[in-house]
Image (spheres, rainbow, N blue to C red):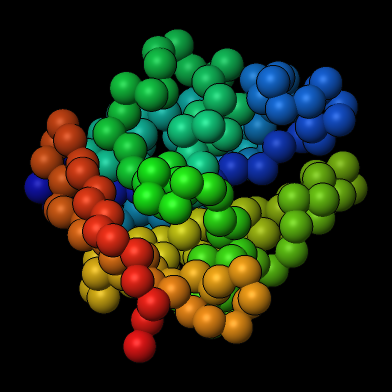
Length: 199
């Protein structure tokens, strides 16, 4: 793949929001595992906290990093482990772009259920429990499932030029048109059109 890899990223934490004094202290949550999908390798990979030094060269070589709420959560949790600003990396944050159009957040679960017909396999509390019980393989599997869901949302958007979500009644599917361009080494752009009901 020319000009670097495309990486899909998600992470889990060692601590809960309550344990660190709320959402203003994401840098205190500590990483339990980071999961990625590499388009170049066509491979899912998981990195525990002691293995993060293997992760950063992968991110440095990427032409695009894709995540869901990655700028406001994952990068802030991961930042204490890295010597430069993670925000420098070319990043497509699916949630950030959805909020620009809708004016409010949608969960990964909501988008996945409407768009893909399937959702997450658990909750963040499950991930915390796996970490505390030393069940690292279950923790990695949970994290990588979220990576897969995020990757599949991205793939659906690229192929079909739209994502789906349900209205407040939960019965009517609405369409969020998207246009994801193949990124250059320095910049990736997400174009979102007007929202309309899917037919």
